Length: 298
Ligand code: MLT
Ligand code: MN
Ligand code: ZN
Image (cartoon, helix red, strand yellow):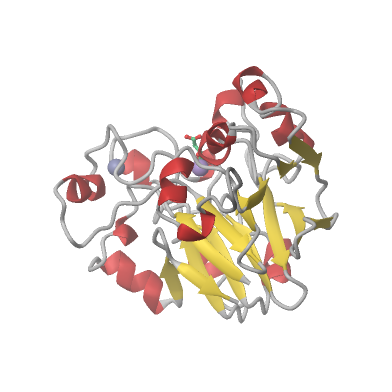
């Protein structure tokens, strides 16, 4: 299996257009301890010919330009992108569908809740005769038709930000937020870019896995609050922090996972600074911090 990290940052990208937090400031200054990153997405293929996108980021056009495997092929028009699997309805995971609007046939997999968000309004620009929306259900394996199968499963999450009304339930395990188990029949990996809590059930699912890409949004739960950028904790945003009693480093620590890679990294997260103590800490705990263009062969 071929895996390419198209975008390793969380919503907003890195640096974020309006942000001068300590980490973004380094990026704006061109400091070589940080690399700019685009928004959250992976590309996966069994044969290197047909590719599945895991989420479609607002930066998808730029990501395609940067990724020769995704350049058009054939005589006139034709993309190796055969399908997109959506893990939730957040803007950073769906807006890239608008980039794929030029009369190209592909499939969009997602839960009923997520597909509802990409069916109407501006997404009506996707030609219904060519773009097939295929609803998936948690724990129900989906065949892509090009050598990859995906089993989506519920992880603790919340409704997309733009659908929040009144009291928002955080940590519900329904169809709002999915993790994905992807296999080519021989090898298997997990993609979980958004997850509010590492539950015992999730720990059991991931125990002994070869490869897990996991939510690396913030280093500490109160990161955005301490920086004075937001009044929301990571938990309130539907993300589990790396550190702390409930943090992903601790809760995914002793599960004999062979390779653990953080994705969906927010621009405030100090692990983005290559010589930071925080980066050293996650690496000492056996984690890799993904970057755009990172390739993994499984
Ligand atoms: C998130 O991951 O929390 C979302 O991408 C937030 C957003 O939509 O801006
Ligand atoms: Mn996001
Ligand atoms: Zn920032």
